[in-house]
Length: 249
Image 1 (tube, rainbow, N blue to C red):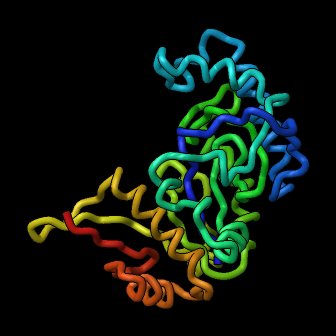
Image 2 (tube, rainbow, N blue to C red):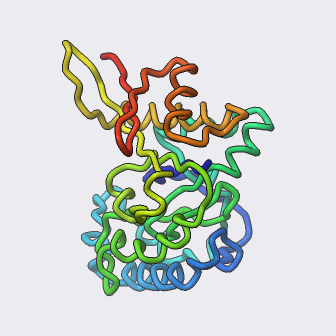
């Protein structure tokens, strides 16, 4: 089983650590694509257009300076880099040893800069959303799609897709892989009506990911996934290609 997560805008600082080694990251097929995006981002951050292109407020303008030094900045493992609501509820640091090993094997984090990362991959803190149109590359989701397709389509077993829509656009499984991919949607129910939620969706996705790595057996089908999550106390409803998690207001 593979669990796909989005990254987070919030990131921990790396005070010390080795510099970036692109060739040492997981999914080496993506190395040349990572080089191209990294070069484009560093070049952008030496121009006055960087703040607007990256959609940064004045208070976040320091991210531009940080991006300029990505090749020599200290790195930390992706499992420690990303923070925020989803990763708080995933709680990697508090997982028992066995669950941490399963998390390392099962979780893949999507990224506008790196494409896809395992939890043990060391990268520096950076700022680049998948929704950015990065000169001269253009839209990052469209750029990454042909590179990520052969990599993720080849992954065996069930793929539980917990990505947000922005990152979901960077990989859509081909026909032969679609039956192995189940997207998880979080809905809030109130007064008999269900609506898509954002903040609580992040918390629920993080909790679901934690539950799936704490579970020693990996579900092999969408039906088994629904059974596992129901057994863990979630309101899970299966539909073609997706699983709805219902939370009450």
